[in-house]
Length: 298
Ligand code: G1P
Image (cartoon, rainbow, N blue to C red; front, side, top):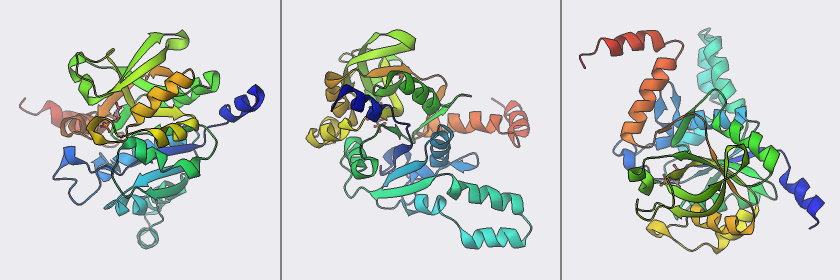
């Protein structure tokens, strides 16, 4: 492929996003025993809706959700609910009806069922045929990031400039690095880090830095060939981080410190923190909720 063709291929608008949602949600049991963790409500919307809205707001038109057993509620949530809409219409609750219709009209939704939970890398690989030959976004639903310019928008803006794979990162305390992929990188222009290497969930001793991978990625299609060759790694799972390691060898790849407050909503405490902050920001509930919190005997 000529350099011009290659440039055109990578410079395409990013219109597709992959949202892996096949995980078992073991950190949130028993709440997630029979219902998907992606459907846990943060104030008044399920977690996955925040991530889908972030993607759509950043120009994504096609959302590919990787699901598994017990995840049907996700499909129903983004589908039209005829009976519910009709009942609301008959009761004159037109605004509420419109807000429900917006959820299903936001984007085109495709679902791929990951039959075996073989890891994040394996989940992403299952989207290969739907992505085809174009750059795409990956958003992990556990990471809820709050900022006036969404995390994905920040990253897409940078990708348009650099046209190189981009990974969202944030600094974390060294004691927490074992929960994340961690990058080995050097500072580059525009607040970017050029990534030399990555390690999935290292011990604080092994960690090459305290720059942790946060669940937002802009990837180029060659990741699929690399994932096909990736052997099970940490926790015996096919790790996206291991394929990214190889990608960093092939081409320039960058880390970007995402601006915004991040919550790990897949974790009980992180979810509580997110609920409080988002509750306080909610235009309808915030004022009363703040008063309630202030009056608590802490
Ligand atoms: C995944 C990735 C990890 C990344 C993290 C961000 O891990 O494997 O590299 O740092 O998401 O949330 P998980 O949290 O799914 O175990």
